[in-house]
Length: 444
Image (cartoon, rainbow, N blue to C red; front, top):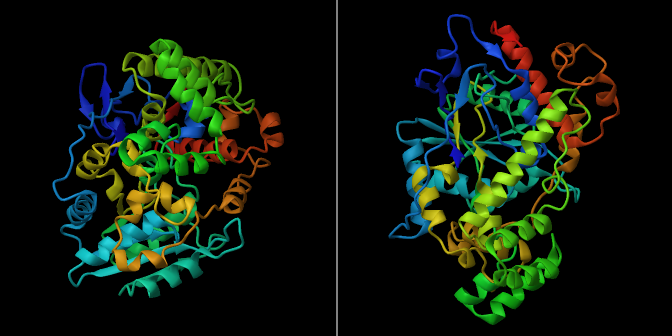
């Protein structure tokens, strides 16, 4: 499910948004076994917070989402979500990157602003092809003739400490830069920062969708999709296996899906060596049980491979915590838009007539834009792996770390760790544990 706002329950059945309201007169005792689960492979890949980190406090399951089509279509649902989220705000902020998702949010924010200020924030990064995120945002602002202010943040100099939350660590890729953006936004009078978080997971075309697309749009569209799918993931082998698997028992189908879709970290998950014992063994055991439970769930509900992949892309999903003292949110995760998007047939997420693979696989996001402006949209996805690698390198393993001092992280293994995702999660855990100590928590 979607954690838009995490809720917590204590042993007496009391529920609160803030776990420290349930933890007793002392700020609470951190359970390191639970913190260690942040390094379980499903979590580092899926980027979610699986549990409460506090002794005696459990994370409440989110409310299920009932798919419900919007009578006027997905674009109208998106406009309503943006309007609802910005109601009562005088100045609207939007984090943009130069990609389709955040641009859709910015365009709709301008459409419903009705004279209010709209301020966009972009982190200056160089993508993997050498392009500038800020330059792309400038181009799109001109192409869409948007009446906004733009703030460009330098990731090397515009950095601040993210606001600590008892709900869990910040999962932003560049949390200190996002915190600096929040500080700048506060200085400019921004009441809310919107983002495109959740779009890929919610509206992206799943793997194994050949049959679903054929049913909705015919054989030529399915052939085009299969050609696009051939260059990623399990490719044509996976598409063929998905079709043939329908002849097999549900449990066998689900197990094969998992083995083909997640052949590495999620098929036989093992927590990374930076996690010290006994936490590594416990995180590995939790991950294996998590995988088993998900395979059983797919079998019980008799999900096809494409439905299972769409489900696994979105669930579980923890919405990003605010990096500063300003509310943050994504209209893609607004309850009414979620319901409308989940009511959409999976085959409709793909549109064979669009000119590039990126557009074809982002068809429903493309449809959120005015048709006369579509030609100005970026035609390929930006990747910023260098920026994430640089961020991971900011973790100073030579200085004393709380996570090492309490025995959660193995310092020798950490010095030799090179996996960017693992290092980013270790940094997030370290930042959270240090914040917990500053707020008077005990660590056990």
